[in-house]
Image (cartoon, rainbow, N blue to C red; front, top):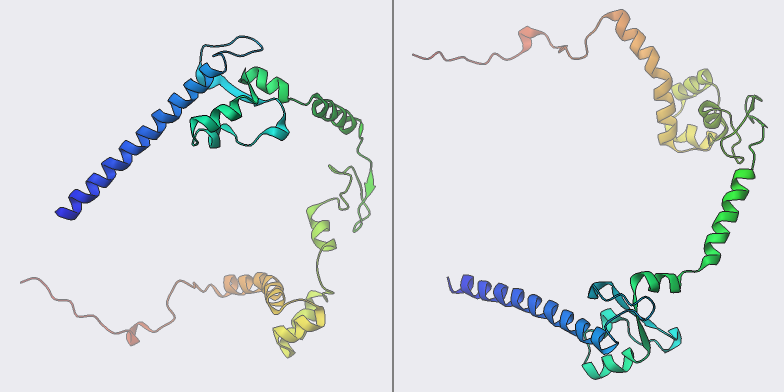
Length: 224
């Protein structure tokens, strides 16, 4: 019970401190805004204190941003405010905006629109196609998979014959891939054959292969 009361007092104290710090920062901002004239020096805006910001006239003389400055003493705040002008966010944004970036973006967009897509020949099948990107080299996903396949793979029949006499690791060393890649490729080759055998035999994998007579019987007790 004593520990619970102590935790409650700590929680109440933390909430009080958060509220105290929030109000202190607001009063410091109001005091700093009034110290700099209370309005934007460009357009005269003075309706909302949250929209006003402190702009350093010389960025090289900047020692603290406002988020750091509000935690210091008033004497240090005044020393830093003397290097600043009070501006609203609109005027502050216009002052920091670099129009050269916009002109570069417009020029880049124009060059991008002027860039025409050129017909290419697929590296695998030789088909003529128009790529979405000029760096494309294949006409379809199938040709891409064929062209980007790692290793010198034999035909499916040869791979199955190698599998009958060798392990996955040995085949992987010959082809130049890992044993897991060999296992996956052989599994894809054998999957249709296994499905055809299963459909022909009519076997149901979900059905148990055990003889029902061999299964242990579970005693059933009727309610008396």
